[in-house]
Amino acid sequence: MAMMWSSASATAVTTLPTRPIPGSYGPPLVGPLKDRLDYFWFQGPETFFRSRMATHKSTVFRTNMPPTFPFFVGVDPRVVTVLDCTSFSALFDLEVVEKKNILIGDYMPSLSFTGDTRVVVYLDPSEPDHARVKSFCLELLRRGAKTWVSSFLSNLDVMLATIEQGIAKDGSAGLFGPLQKCIFAFLCKSIIGADPSVSPDVGENGFVMLDKWLALQLLPTVKVGAIPQPLEEILLHSFPLPFFLVSRDYRKLYEFVEKQGQEVVQRAETEHGLSKHDAINNILFVLGFNAFGGFSVFFPTLLTTIGRDKTGLREKLKDEVRRVMKSRGEKRPSFETVREMELVRSTVYEVLRLNPPVPLQYGRARTDFTLNSHDAAFKVEKGELLCGYQPLVMRDPAVFDDPETFAPERFMGSGKELLKYVFWSNGPETGTPTPANKQCAAKDYVVETACLLMAEIFYRYDEFVCADDAISVTKLDRATERE
Ligand code: HEM
Image (tube, rainbow, N blue to C red; front, side, top):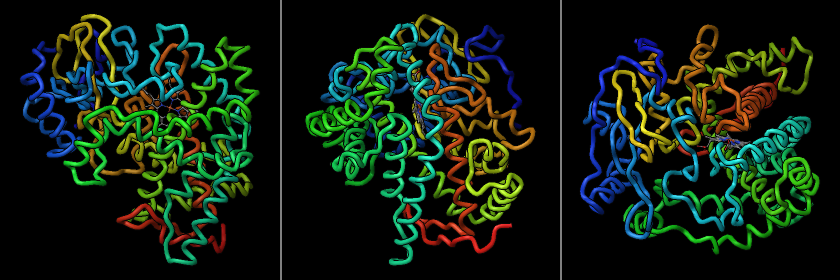
C-alpha cells in the first residue's frame, strides 16, 4: 500500500483532477467558536482533524483554528489544512509560502515576550535579518559542538544520579524535573558557554522561568487538560496572556546572557551585524523556546516510549549499544560512536515520526498557486494560511506501512529511503538547514543527542523501566557486566 502515490511535489504541475477546496468557515463568530470548542474540548486536536478529513474525503480542506473569539482581536482563524505528506511539503516551498509571523498560526504573542525583537523564527527568509540570525545560530552550534557532548553527558550524570537516589528512596522517581534541569544546564553551557550555577537564581530556577515564559506564549493555542475544560476555555483560551507575569524572569535571564554569554553576544555583533539587544533576545529565544522547549517535549516522550515498551526492544537496544561501544573500545558514547548504532537511530526517528514535538506548522500563500495532495489538485489564493498537523501527516498511509504502529526498525536498511518523509524539523530529514530555508538549525544535533541519551542509558544500565501512567522511572539497574 505505502509509497503507491506519484512522487509529484506539492506545487508541481500535474494531471491530478482539480477540486474546489472542501469545507467552510461557518457563520462569523459562531463558526470559529464551534471549531475552537471542538478542537480543545469536544473532539481534541486529533479527532478534530481526522473527523473533518473523513467528512470531506480529503486531506486538504477549510476549517478554523484557535485561538479565536472573543478577545483575540485581529486574529484570523481561517486556514486550509494540509494533512498528507505531499500537500504538507508545500510548507517547505518558499517560492509559494511565506513564513512571516506565523510560527504558531495567525496569532502571534506580544513582542514583549522577545524583548521587542522579532526573533528569527518569526522572520521570512526574504527578510535580510533572517539570514543574518540563522547564520549566527548555525555558527553557535558549530562552535558549541566541542562542548555539546561533554556537557550533555556530565549533566546527564547528575540527572541519572538523582533518579537512582529517588528510586532507592521511594521505589520510583519523577523524570521531568531532573530532565529539564539537565537540558537547561547543558544548553547554557554549549550555546552560550556559561554554567547556570554561576548565578544562584538562574542555576536553581532558570528552567522554571523558561517554563512559565513558554506557557504564557503557547497556552492560547494548546489543549492542556489540567483544569476543568470550561475553566480552561475561559481562563486560557479567550485572550492573549500578558507578559508582565514573567517580565522579571525575562529580565534576569536577559542579564544572565548579557553577562555570562559576552563572547557569543559580541560575535553576533561583530561577525553577523546584529545589535546587542537583538542578539541577546535571539539567543534567549533559541535557547529557551527552540532548544529547551523542543527537548522538553521530545525527551520525555522518547524515554517513556522506550521505558514502557513490552516487545523486548530494550534488550535489542542494549545489545547494539554494548556491541558498538566494545568494538570501539569506548567507555562513553560520542557522536561518531552513535552513528554506528542503526537500531538506536531508527528508534529515535520512529519516535519523532509518531510524536513530532512541534505538531503544527503554518505557511501563508505568497501568490495564487496550485496545491497538490496525493490524489487531487486545489487552487489556493494569495494570502490564505496553510496549516499542517504533523502527527497525522506522519501517519500518512500512502507513505508509511502500518502507519499507526510503533515500528522501531522502520528506518533501518532500505527503510532509510523513508527519511525524506520525516518532517519533525520543518523540512525533510534528508534536507539541510541553511540561512535560505526555515528548517530547524539543530536538526542533526537533536537526533545525535537523542542517540547519545539512548546509548548512555543502555551502556550504563541493564534495565530501564518507566511507569505506564506517569512520567517516572520505576527501575534503573546498573549494568552488572558489559560484554
Ligand atoms: C527537540 C528539539 C527541537 C525541536 C523539536 C525543534 C523543532 C523545530 C521546528 C519545528 C522548527 C521550525 C519552526 C517553524 O518555522 O515552524 C525549528 C526552527 C528552529 N530551530 Fe529547532 N528544534 C529543536 C531544537 C533546536 C535547538 C537545540 C536549536 C539551537 C540550539 C534550534 C534552533 C532552531 C532555529 C534557530 C530555528 C529557526 C529556523 C529558521 O527560522 O530558519 N532548535 N525547530
